[in-house]
Image (cartoon, rainbow, N blue to C red; front, side, top):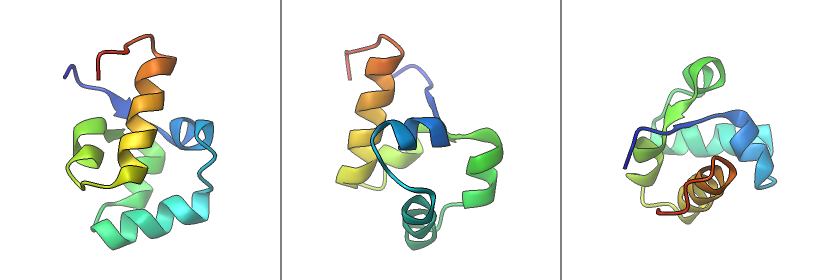
Length: 69
């Protein structure tokens, strides 16, 4: 997969709220503040194995015109 950075905008695209995303990041040991500033590599999210992550990455790929994921 070509490197894809996921942002809060991508999270909102699939109706995820900031507090829910923050809880997910804490649970997975990911840096929420870093994510807000710079986004996060889609593969890092996918590596969590979360359906939440997969949904967000899939929709981000669609939004960017890449439906091969």
